[in-house]
Amino acid sequence: MTKRLGPHRRQVGAGLSIKDKTMNTKNKQNAIAPIIIAVLITSALTAFSPREARAADEATDMIVELITGSDDDMRLMAIQQVSEAAPGKDATKRFVALLPKLKPDMQAKMIDALGTRGDATARPAILAMLTSKTPAIRVAAAGALAAMASPDDVPALAKQAAAGSEAEQDAARQCLRKLKGEKMNAAMIKAMKDADPKTKIELINALTDRNVTSASPTIAKGLGDSEQTVRTATLKSLSAMGDETHTTALVKHMKAAKDPKERRQTALTLLAVCRRGKAKCAPAVIAGMKGTDASTCILLMRILTEAGGPEALTEVVARMKDDDKNISATALRTLTGWPDRDAVPHLKTMAGDVTNLRNHILSIRALVRLASANKDRPADLTGLTEAMKLASRTEEKTLILGAMSAIATPEALTITAACLDKPELVEPAAQAAVTISEKIIKTNKAQVQTVLQKILQKIIKTAKNETTLTRAKRLLD
Image (cartoon, rainbow, N blue to C red):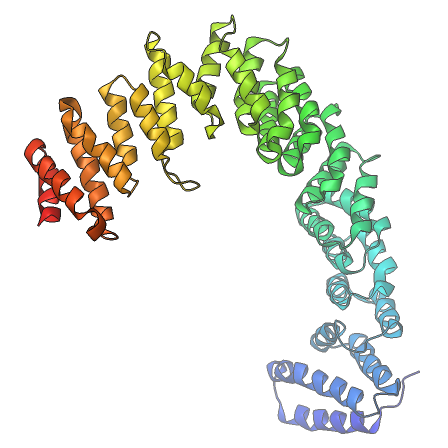
């Protein structure tokens, strides 16, 4: 039985009737349809006191009447109003009841609108639509569930993400990532237990994108999965979320991996975990190096650099005496490429032995690298000075002078200028001294004016490089 229109609806309806008489084309009707519906619903919601539920009922009546009508354009406009109009569970139930009466394309749009509305009252009906024979409806249902799903819906969404069409998979994946709350995370973790490989991968990827680090212990079990695709997804997840507690399992997996690609991917994951866990990861990596073949030992030693710390450094130094030449050579390269100054004592010891020229050169260059300025730390004048004393070749001394040029202090200038007395270092020393002078003269010219004059005059007398001479003369003037 059709409800009788209220006075405000009769007025608007009359207006519509008059308007229809003046319009000759369907396009004109379409143009005013949104305005008409908005006026109808606004009129219903404001015609009564806010305390009266009749306002919402009137608006719901109008929307239902238009949706069940014969005009597709008006029906579409009315469906758009489902998202926000007539709040409340009763209205949602009435809108849900319309779903079976709609054509598939309109059903999909109604599902979208109910999803935007976000009332969990619609959840059972939307959930049922996941098994619809119409792909567009399944896609709409997966998207709509993001706002109203319960933890019990996670398995169905994960299954659709794994086995649906491309559009269905995308919608389900987005929904899994939008679900809110720790209960949803717990449901995803629980669903992994009995999931088939494809569904398990979807759950792993969703938990990773949601950055649910608490899921890592469960995800890590995938390293032992019989399906390589699951193991690959597990490695990618641990690369993003794994910590030092996973180091032992990753080392074991890398050593056991038969497929070169999987072995390499495991090594990259282990590298990422060590980069985060730092020294906490070192013990497990060191333990993995013992009793293994040379290629694995070398790979783990390179990874050990990312872990760092005293234990890792001690292991690398010890490996320099390994009977396997490839391992000892890798240890040398690892030590000379060590990222922090903890390696300096070991490098100085090695640099002091000039009988092994190769080790001497590599250690001097490493000392220079660690004492030079970079984005994280200023240059270390003491370290560079010590390296200069240990260096035996012009090439390394030139390198040290270049590093000293970044230190704008009178002390650095004095040390650099002292090298002007050594014929083989005149040019690099002059260039470094001029560079330092240019920086000093801008800040404390008065304090070092006399020293600067003497050094610049000495540069002009001894240097031959025209560019250096021009810069020195300009400063002296």
